[in-house]
Image (tube, rainbow, N blue to C red; front, side, top):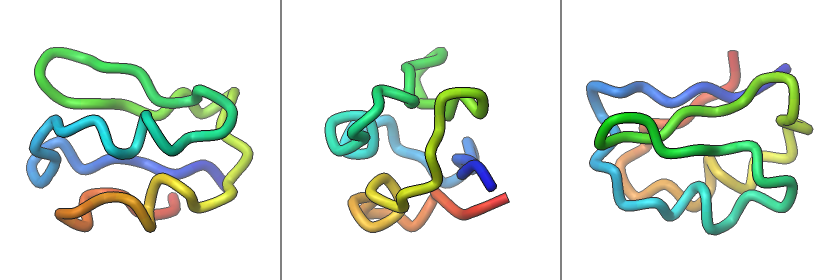
Length: 57
């Protein structure tokens, strides 16, 4: 299952994108979004998010 980013909690710091081993996270507006077709559900983004904005779908 892919991860998702809650845009209401995301502060746009980019920690998730920097820690994603498959580059499945892209900036969108002033936040970030997970490309579901690229995400390998490793959890690196979730553990690196300082606001807890990332969860598994």
